[in-house]
Image (tube, rainbow, N blue to C red):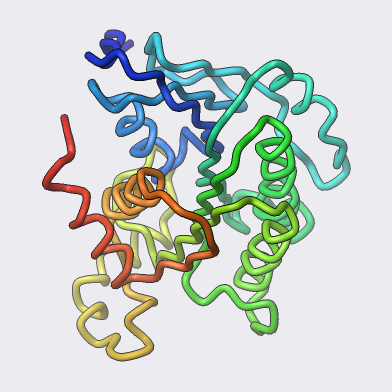
Amino acid sequence: MQAPLPLPETDAPLRRVLLSGASGLVGSRLLERLLAPGAGFQVVAPTRSPLALRSPRLENPVYEGPTAERRSDSGLRKTLSGFRAEAWICALGTTMAKAGNQAAFVAVDRDLVLKFAALARALGARHAILVSSAGANPRSGNFYLRVKAEAERGLAEQNFPRVDILRPGLLLGERTERRPLERFGQVLAPLYNPLLLGPLARFRAIEAEVVADAAMHCLEAGGSGWFVHEYRAMRAAAEARRPGRGG
Protein backbone atom coordinates (compact mmCIF):
# COMPACT_ATOMS: atom_id res chain seq x y z
CA MET A 1 0.00 0.00 0.00
CA GLN A 2 1.34 3.43 -0.86
CA ALA A 3 1.88 6.03 1.82
CA PRO A 4 -0.72 8.83 1.97
CA LEU A 5 0.09 11.85 -0.12
CA PRO A 6 0.47 15.12 1.82
CA LEU A 7 -2.11 17.86 1.72
CA PRO A 8 -1.25 20.77 -0.56
CA GLU A 9 0.70 23.58 1.02
CA THR A 10 -1.89 26.26 0.37
CA ASP A 11 -4.71 28.01 2.16
CA ALA A 12 -6.81 28.15 -0.99
CA PRO A 13 -9.98 26.03 -0.94
CA LEU A 14 -9.65 22.66 -2.66
CA ARG A 15 -11.51 22.17 -5.93
CA ARG A 16 -13.70 19.08 -5.80
CA VAL A 17 -13.45 16.74 -8.79
CA LEU A 18 -15.51 13.64 -9.55
CA LEU A 19 -13.32 11.13 -11.41
CA SER A 20 -14.91 8.17 -13.22
CA GLY A 21 -12.60 5.36 -14.31
CA ALA A 22 -9.83 6.05 -11.78
CA SER A 23 -8.46 2.50 -12.00
CA GLY A 24 -7.90 2.54 -15.78
CA LEU A 25 -4.87 3.44 -17.89
CA VAL A 26 -5.66 7.16 -18.21
CA GLY A 27 -7.74 7.42 -15.03
CA SER A 28 -4.96 6.15 -12.77
CA ARG A 29 -2.55 8.73 -14.18
CA LEU A 30 -5.14 11.45 -13.74
CA LEU A 31 -5.62 10.42 -10.12
CA GLU A 32 -1.87 10.76 -9.50
CA ARG A 33 -1.90 14.27 -10.93
CA LEU A 34 -5.01 15.36 -9.04
CA LEU A 35 -3.50 14.17 -5.76
CA ALA A 36 0.03 15.43 -6.36
CA PRO A 37 1.41 17.72 -3.62
CA GLY A 38 0.19 21.25 -4.21
CA ALA A 39 -2.33 20.27 -6.88
CA GLY A 40 -5.23 21.73 -4.90
CA PHE A 41 -7.91 19.13 -5.66
CA GLN A 42 -10.18 17.00 -3.52
CA VAL A 43 -11.15 13.88 -5.49
CA VAL A 44 -14.20 11.65 -5.36
CA ALA A 45 -13.32 8.51 -7.33
CA PRO A 46 -16.06 5.86 -7.28
CA THR A 47 -14.82 2.43 -8.38
CA ARG A 48 -16.12 -1.14 -8.44
CA SER A 49 -13.15 -2.31 -6.35
CA PRO A 50 -11.26 -0.26 -3.73
CA LEU A 51 -8.25 1.64 -5.00
CA ALA A 52 -4.81 0.84 -3.58
CA LEU A 53 -3.91 4.53 -3.45
CA ARG A 54 -4.70 6.35 -0.21
CA SER A 55 -4.76 10.09 0.38
CA PRO A 56 -6.51 12.50 2.76
CA ARG A 57 -7.74 14.23 -0.40
CA LEU A 58 -9.30 11.09 -1.89
CA GLU A 59 -12.76 9.66 -1.27
CA ASN A 60 -13.20 6.26 -2.91
CA PRO A 61 -16.80 5.00 -2.61
CA VAL A 62 -17.34 1.52 -4.07
CA TYR A 63 -20.34 0.89 -6.31
CA GLU A 64 -21.82 -2.10 -8.06
CA GLY A 65 -20.87 -2.22 -11.72
CA PRO A 66 -23.52 -2.08 -14.48
CA THR A 67 -24.76 -4.91 -16.65
CA ALA A 68 -26.81 -4.91 -19.82
CA GLU A 69 -29.76 -6.22 -17.78
CA ARG A 70 -29.45 -3.85 -14.81
CA ARG A 71 -29.80 -0.32 -16.12
CA SER A 72 -31.03 1.45 -12.97
CA ASP A 73 -28.57 3.94 -11.50
CA SER A 74 -30.23 4.01 -8.06
CA GLY A 75 -27.26 2.23 -6.46
CA LEU A 76 -24.80 4.69 -7.96
CA ARG A 77 -26.94 7.63 -6.88
CA LYS A 78 -27.05 6.28 -3.34
CA THR A 79 -23.27 5.78 -3.36
CA LEU A 80 -22.65 9.40 -4.35
CA SER A 81 -25.40 10.91 -2.19
CA GLY A 82 -24.09 13.88 -0.25
CA PHE A 83 -21.01 14.48 -2.41
CA ARG A 84 -20.36 17.72 -4.27
CA ALA A 85 -18.18 18.35 -7.32
CA GLU A 86 -17.11 21.34 -9.36
CA ALA A 87 -15.82 19.29 -12.29
CA TRP A 88 -16.21 15.78 -13.65
CA ILE A 89 -13.57 13.81 -15.54
CA CYS A 90 -14.56 10.55 -17.22
CA ALA A 91 -11.96 8.00 -18.32
CA LEU A 92 -14.30 5.01 -18.30
CA GLY A 93 -13.96 2.37 -20.98
CA THR A 94 -13.96 -1.35 -21.63
CA THR A 95 -13.36 -3.60 -24.65
CA MET A 96 -15.65 -5.89 -26.60
CA ALA A 97 -13.53 -8.84 -25.48
CA LYS A 98 -13.89 -7.95 -21.80
CA ALA A 99 -17.56 -6.97 -22.07
CA GLY A 100 -18.45 -10.18 -23.90
CA ASN A 101 -21.17 -8.76 -26.15
CA GLN A 102 -22.37 -5.49 -27.63
CA ALA A 103 -25.09 -4.89 -25.03
CA ALA A 104 -22.59 -5.20 -22.16
CA PHE A 105 -20.18 -2.90 -23.96
CA VAL A 106 -22.88 -0.25 -24.41
CA ALA A 107 -23.81 -0.58 -20.73
CA VAL A 108 -20.35 0.73 -19.79
CA ASP A 109 -19.08 2.93 -22.62
CA ARG A 110 -22.33 4.80 -23.21
CA ASP A 111 -24.91 4.15 -20.50
CA LEU A 112 -22.62 4.29 -17.45
CA VAL A 113 -20.82 7.32 -18.86
CA LEU A 114 -24.12 9.17 -19.23
CA LYS A 115 -25.32 8.09 -15.79
CA PHE A 116 -22.18 9.59 -14.33
CA ALA A 117 -22.70 12.73 -16.43
CA ALA A 118 -26.20 13.26 -15.07
CA LEU A 119 -25.03 12.59 -11.52
CA ALA A 120 -22.05 14.93 -11.89
CA ARG A 121 -24.36 17.71 -13.04
CA ALA A 122 -26.69 17.02 -10.11
CA LEU A 123 -23.70 17.19 -7.74
CA GLY A 124 -22.95 20.68 -9.01
CA ALA A 125 -20.29 20.04 -11.67
CA ARG A 126 -20.09 22.76 -14.29
CA HIS A 127 -17.16 21.34 -16.27
CA ALA A 128 -17.08 17.93 -17.95
CA ILE A 129 -14.00 16.28 -19.45
CA LEU A 130 -14.60 13.05 -21.38
CA VAL A 131 -11.93 10.73 -22.75
CA SER A 132 -13.59 9.41 -25.91
CA SER A 133 -11.92 7.99 -29.04
CA ALA A 134 -10.37 9.15 -32.28
CA GLY A 135 -12.85 8.67 -35.09
CA ALA A 136 -15.97 8.81 -32.90
CA ASN A 137 -18.83 9.30 -35.34
CA PRO A 138 -22.55 8.48 -35.03
CA ARG A 139 -22.58 7.39 -38.71
CA SER A 140 -19.48 5.23 -38.52
CA GLY A 141 -19.66 1.66 -39.74
CA ASN A 142 -17.60 0.72 -36.69
CA PHE A 143 -19.75 -0.23 -33.68
CA TYR A 144 -17.14 0.96 -31.14
CA LEU A 145 -16.87 4.41 -32.73
CA ARG A 146 -20.66 4.78 -32.95
CA VAL A 147 -21.04 4.04 -29.23
CA LYS A 148 -18.34 6.57 -28.37
CA ALA A 149 -20.14 9.18 -30.47
CA GLU A 150 -23.45 8.36 -28.76
CA ALA A 151 -21.82 9.02 -25.39
CA GLU A 152 -20.54 12.38 -26.65
CA ARG A 153 -23.98 13.29 -28.01
CA GLY A 154 -25.67 12.30 -24.75
CA LEU A 155 -23.23 14.45 -22.80
CA ALA A 156 -24.36 17.48 -24.79
CA GLU A 157 -27.85 17.07 -23.29
CA GLN A 158 -26.55 17.63 -19.75
CA ASN A 159 -25.88 21.33 -20.34
CA PHE A 160 -22.46 21.60 -18.73
CA PRO A 161 -21.21 25.18 -19.21
CA ARG A 162 -17.86 23.79 -20.37
CA VAL A 163 -17.18 20.44 -22.05
CA ASP A 164 -13.83 19.10 -23.24
CA ILE A 165 -13.80 15.96 -25.37
CA LEU A 166 -10.45 14.19 -25.71
CA ARG A 167 -10.20 11.79 -28.65
CA PRO A 168 -7.04 9.69 -28.40
CA GLY A 169 -6.10 6.89 -30.76
CA LEU A 170 -4.50 3.73 -29.38
CA LEU A 171 -3.31 4.41 -25.84
CA LEU A 172 0.32 3.69 -25.02
CA GLY A 173 1.24 2.60 -21.51
CA GLU A 174 1.35 -0.35 -19.15
CA ARG A 175 -2.00 -1.67 -17.94
CA THR A 176 -2.67 -3.85 -14.93
CA GLU A 177 -4.83 -6.09 -17.13
CA ARG A 178 -3.72 -8.05 -20.19
CA ARG A 179 -4.96 -6.85 -23.58
CA PRO A 180 -2.96 -8.84 -26.17
CA LEU A 181 -4.32 -7.07 -29.27
CA GLU A 182 -3.71 -3.66 -27.75
CA ARG A 183 -0.20 -4.69 -26.78
CA PHE A 184 0.46 -5.80 -30.35
CA GLY A 185 -0.69 -2.40 -31.60
CA GLN A 186 1.56 -0.66 -29.11
CA VAL A 187 4.56 -2.54 -30.46
CA LEU A 188 3.71 -1.47 -34.02
CA ALA A 189 2.90 2.15 -33.12
CA PRO A 190 6.43 3.53 -33.77
CA LEU A 191 6.20 2.12 -37.29
CA TYR A 192 2.74 3.31 -38.30
CA ASN A 193 2.52 6.64 -36.42
CA PRO A 194 4.81 8.50 -38.88
CA LEU A 195 2.69 7.22 -41.78
CA LEU A 196 -0.49 8.82 -40.46
CA LEU A 197 -0.32 12.29 -41.98
CA GLY A 198 -2.78 15.12 -42.50
CA PRO A 199 -6.33 14.23 -41.38
CA LEU A 200 -5.13 10.73 -40.45
CA ALA A 201 -2.83 12.12 -37.75
CA ARG A 202 -5.72 12.06 -35.30
CA PHE A 203 -5.53 8.26 -35.31
CA ARG A 204 -1.91 8.14 -34.11
CA ALA A 205 -1.19 6.17 -30.95
CA ILE A 206 -0.61 8.43 -27.96
CA GLU A 207 0.83 7.98 -24.48
CA ALA A 208 -1.68 7.78 -21.63
CA GLU A 209 0.56 10.23 -19.77
CA VAL A 210 0.01 12.81 -22.53
CA VAL A 211 -3.76 12.34 -22.45
CA ALA A 212 -3.76 12.76 -18.66
CA ASP A 213 -1.69 15.94 -18.91
CA ALA A 214 -4.02 17.28 -21.61
CA ALA A 215 -7.05 16.56 -19.43
CA MET A 216 -5.42 18.39 -16.52
CA HIS A 217 -4.70 21.35 -18.78
CA CYS A 218 -8.40 21.45 -19.70
CA LEU A 219 -9.38 21.18 -16.03
CA GLU A 220 -7.22 24.15 -15.16
CA ALA A 221 -8.57 26.27 -18.03
CA GLY A 222 -11.36 28.75 -17.50
CA GLY A 223 -14.22 29.87 -19.66
CA SER A 224 -17.11 28.01 -21.22
CA GLY A 225 -17.90 26.22 -24.46
CA TRP A 226 -17.57 22.86 -26.21
CA PHE A 227 -14.05 21.79 -27.19
CA VAL A 228 -12.80 18.70 -29.03
CA HIS A 229 -9.11 17.78 -28.70
CA GLU A 230 -7.50 15.31 -31.09
CA TYR A 231 -3.89 14.11 -31.35
CA ARG A 232 -2.09 17.39 -32.05
CA ALA A 233 -4.27 19.43 -29.71
CA MET A 234 -3.73 16.96 -26.86
CA ARG A 235 0.03 17.05 -27.35
CA ALA A 236 -0.02 20.86 -27.39
CA ALA A 237 -2.15 20.99 -24.24
CA ALA A 238 0.13 18.53 -22.45
CA GLU A 239 3.24 20.52 -23.42
CA ALA A 240 1.59 23.75 -22.25
CA ARG A 241 1.05 22.27 -18.81
CA ARG A 242 4.34 20.46 -18.26
CA PRO A 243 6.59 23.48 -17.43
CA GLY A 244 4.49 24.21 -14.36
CA ARG A 245 3.65 20.65 -13.37
CA GLY A 246 4.63 19.61 -9.90
CA GLY A 247 5.77 16.11 -8.88
